[in-house]
Length: 180
Image (tube, rainbow, N blue to C red; front, side):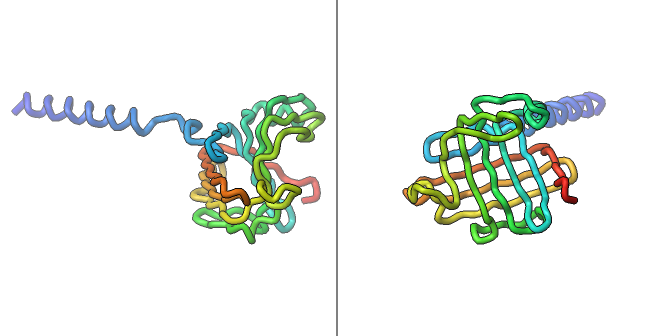
């Protein structure tokens, strides 16, 4: 009986450690935006509520790099996703359709100079000069939103039929407006 207890404990430890290695994969491996066949890693999220909407941004820069850019550090080769959602705040379990999103854009290979995003190449947007790059349908779903983390996914279709998907799970920078 004593050996059976030890065997059970060892077996349980093996099972638990096997499952733990599967579940402990780095969340950043799942943080990406895919535009057709191209994939872009996202390393930080920014949430900025305003009076009647919320800006949700994702970038390939780290939180530390993003914070430094607010203080004047120049960043190069920045990929930047931005959506303005017409709600007072984000809510867990909520899906925001294209009609809830007043602006939407994803630009790659840009620069942050003097705290402003410049240059880059548009991959998609809600409204612009090239109908093929305009998003014609889709939504953003906030899976979970707490004081220190956010989990979201989105899916859009461009005018040329290109499918766009994205997910992000992790911490975020919360920026309050000066007006508040």
